[in-house]
Length: 454
Image 1 (cartoon, rainbow, N blue to C red):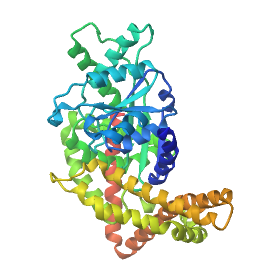
Image 2 (tube, one colour; image 1 turned 120 degrees about the vertical axis):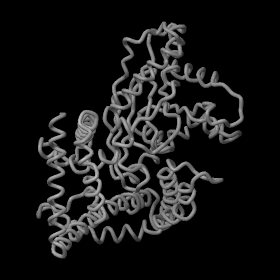
Image 3 (cartoon, rainbow, N blue to C red; image 1 turned 180 degrees about the vertical axis):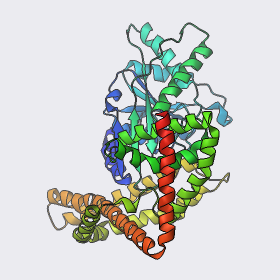
Image 4 (tube, helix red, strand yellow; image 1 turned 60 degrees about the vertical axis):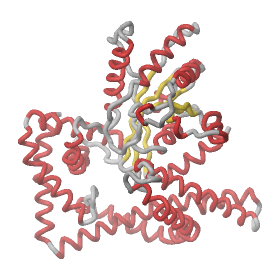
């Protein structure tokens, strides 16, 4: 009951926190006897986002150290569908096994539930897939036998989920959730030695998970790959006639960029080495000007005019939103910055919080403060008008105008960067032209690599 009550609230809150959430392959969440395997880059965000994307209630495998006792344990297990797992490598001092966890998973899957597991076993904010534990494979093997013994002629399906954040710890960042097809385990002999069977299945799971994210084979290559994606993605999409706002297509293009650079790095390392230092230096220099991925010099006059018109027309609505939402926004920001941020940036100290929780903590802080604020707004509005009018008025003045304010800020920021680039061109035309020349040459070199390996 609590799960279903909180789900819509969490959903609209996530839509406010992220600038954009795209979900691809949502139909693969509808299978019965389903085990989801996902990467784990952002702690609490990861299960919340997948739960919101699913029509069904999810069951979550989570570390037993989070459960505690009494009311907390009861809420986690009975209302949030969490299944405790003992992680021996954490060395908590408790001598436990996971027989109860496996048994609970078998029974849940027999009922047709959907379980989500994070086989990387801990949350670290990286875009690639790390080494996996064999738990997902072992759950499937045991659950398949459990279903067979119960007279159910079906198998558990394992579906990979890829969470692709632009930055999970930055407010108003973007997210693409890729949900793949059920993993095919054909060719793996289930009658072999159990540990070897689980190992082979885990390797198959890892390959399928890698397909759903911007996976790189070697972490040390990521800086040059990241810089290449920033420069090339929009160029390639324009060249082949794709809509730049289509995040699904952009993901495919980025996967091809990664593949082409990794192949070239392996076969012709000297080609990448010559580009790498210059590429990273260029991106650092360009971002130091405050432009990041956005390229103001490519903006058409019509786009600038629309942005200016939107800024003028939207100004009074933004001002009204600031009157209604400004105080809780500043309160949430101050609470996170002063009370929590230091705990997620310190290392190896008592009371430290895993840095992967940074975005989740910011979201939770804002959610708590804004819910209380909007309830107060509804209460005050109800003193001057009927409650059935106070609710929608508060919704429009609060949440909807708040969402508009976030869009409005992006318009203003984009205009600011355009004006800054125009001013920079006038103040230092030689440096501006040098940057444009470097950019053009780098794109040409990268496109040769991309086309040579595509």
